[in-house]
Image 1 (cartoon, one colour):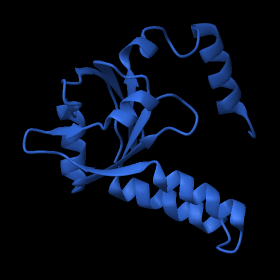
Image 2 (cartoon, one colour):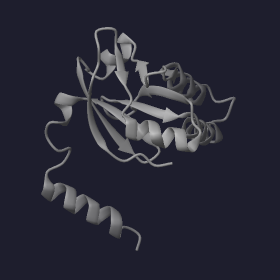
Image 3 (tube, helix red, strand yellow):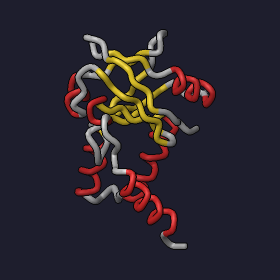
Image 4 (cartoon, rainbow, N blue to C red):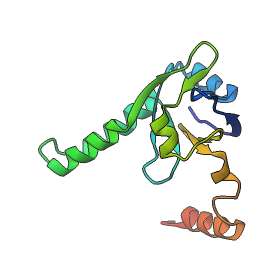
Amino acid sequence: MRFLGNIEAKVDAKGRVFLPAAFRKVLQTAGEETLVMRKDVHQRCLVLYPESAWNRKMDALLAKVNEWDDVGQQVVRQYVSEAEVLTLDGNGRFLIQKRYLQMADIEQSVRFIGMNDVIEIWAQEKTAEPFLSQEDFAAKLKAIMTANT
């Protein structure tokens, strides 16, 4: 399951937004009905995880944390406490709670970006410019692709 795309949408006054049809189709094809949303760990955006992707990420995190490690348990606790289970309504919409809109500085316009097995939701204003300049992007991509070869 891979999401690909960069799609604009509007959040209505109640905080509802339509998940783009292209992404709904990927979910339906994979038999996914449940999504998990949380703020991204590194960026001011939200991340939608299909349930299977969320479970893989949680399994990977839990495999690294000893249940007797207080700090590790605090990390897990914070990670899951900032997550919310979502289901789409019959029209393909879901609700973004106010606290999540504030976490990502989202007002009305959003941009959905497919990022492999997850979907990011950005305030549209934050995506007006490229994330990196073309020169930086080319250099960083080259460094990633040629590392350890």
